Image 1 (cartoon, rainbow, N blue to C red):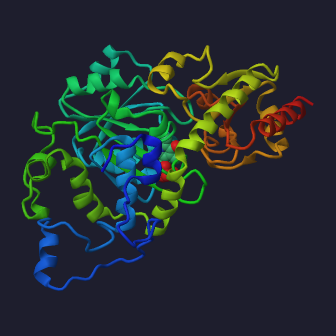
Image 2 (image 1 turned 120 degrees about the vertical axis):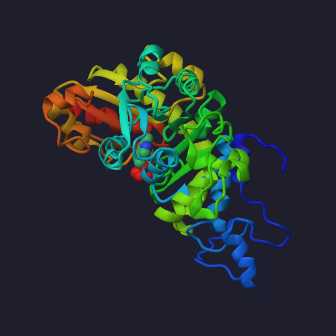
Image 3 (image 1 turned 135 degrees about the horizontal axis):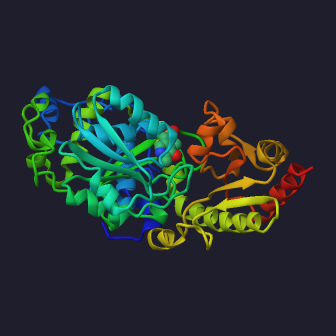
Length: 427
Ligand SMILES: *Cc1c(COP(=O)(O)O)cnc(C)c1O
């Protein structure tokens, strides 16, 4: 297939109908696939032949959407999951098991932090959490003999820290392990981590990729660049898998070993697949991703500038704003923009924050982010409500902090809404 630019791939990658076939990717809402002989089906089970046999492992709708996302990220393969949480879990569990250790940035989505710090610890995997702006020395010092991966978010939710991807990749590779990044907020439109040395990318597709708040979903993408055979840290990939007829993934599947194992072993056993209908909805979102991201970013920059000059706000965090501590990193890794998400600290504390939110007319209060409609959240009274005032301070979720996810509406309407709500917050 001709190599197109990423915007064209949003529309066309992953599905090329032949003569007379449906123009739009069909929803193959079928769990099973019919074959003429049992010999043929046996070969599918042994991974000797490729073909569909059961939707938990592969489905034409899901596979087309996964192939589109692999093309957008520039990877060799991708696997859809039923949620971003499942993608985060698989990304690490595919190469780490009891007795192993993983280094993670502490500036990650709360759900991911809990998955690593509580649930995966119960499975015997140890984690070290480092500040996202840790120095190269501090990062290097965190590695152990049993370290299997480094994990971070390219643009962190909710703290909006921009990752120095090249530095993190350099440290991971110096210790013979891959860098896994969550690229949910910038999306491949604004940041392609593989170009800077990341090895595995995951997304919560629930956010911008879907973009319309219809379907929870996730995806795991393999760059194909990491050499799993360079050391003996990854026996799951480099030695025979007895649960799959003695296949050695690196021998049989070359640079698609990681993604093939995640599908044929983890998805087979754990089974968090999206429904084909949800994959279809995700695909509709992907078709306009490049248009929406551009508008999210230009709107968000204008809203951030308005907030900064409004007189009602103490601090605005948006990496696209000159003066933001990560402005230079954002320019390097996300030159076309970061995302539509802004956070700011309103004057007048918790009471003003509540008044502001309750006064919004266009923007809605939701537990969601990265929707095409402007929405906002007060972390201290929702996602972080179990924390004490001191704990809130410690993790940077101040009582006056508002996370504002700028949508693609007319920016004048968004700013008018923010303006009238700010005025009421001070009354
Ligand atoms: C929402 C989110 C997740 C979790 O994804 P779900 O689809 O809600 O399971 C993971 N990472 C980031 C950065 C997120 O914003």
